[in-house]
Length: 92
Image 1: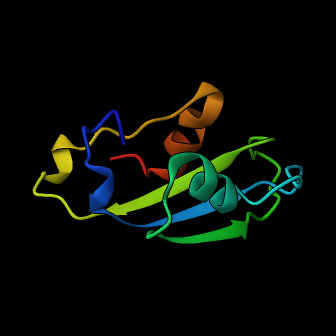
Image 2: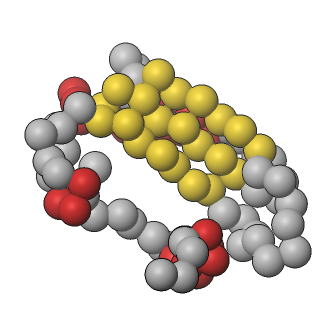
């Protein structure tokens, strides 16, 4: 949200996935409580365990209403998560 200078009121939904080793709390519940996303549709899902997966990883897909073009959006990756993106994008 901050990296793309988005207005929190423009967030329509957020979809969280987490690896099986994270089981203390639902990420959507944390977002609702800490970020005040009380009017945002939120959903959690468990990721499939794969050999090359990143442990202790939470991914978030945020759906927003924006006038920005796709190339103006900054995708944020923390720690080793950028490696997951590189594996999922086919070579040109």
